[in-house]
Length: 227
Image (cartoon, rainbow, N blue to C red; front, side, top):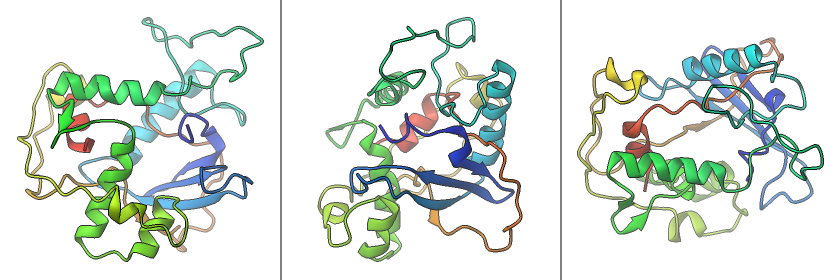
């Protein structure tokens, strides 16, 4: 639910990646908040996609300081309207992002990977598994996954090395149709995010509202990111 509650000003786009501030989480019920820099990668293109989605939000007039990053759209590309007394306001319903991911995984033909159903927890597993594979300490992975300091959840639940899944190409998504399939590693999929720190070289970067991509990048992305 943290992603569905993410507000536009809490995600900033820099030339080298995204800086995300999480207001509350399962391990931060008091809402002290924490920020983490996510380095861009050629295969994920976070900056390009983030800026493209922010342009959509701006065009829709949905890029204000209290607007959520993720929005529900109608089939005509307009903002979905909700009742004035809706408890969650204009934020997505709980579980919406999970349903979207599962839809993409189903389209990609990989609703299950190694017997596990692809869910929104797969995003955590993807990043944690890759970090574990290159020797990132548990303490650092706990910070990246917002787990308690001494938690072993990262090792016992979210470390999911898997065999290679064939790369899937589809022309159904205009985002993927004209882009070659990048080379994937054979042991694990590459993480959805890369944990890092806010670049000290850009302290004066613009602090205006930014965004995170919601436009789906086709079935191939879901297959890569699933666990």
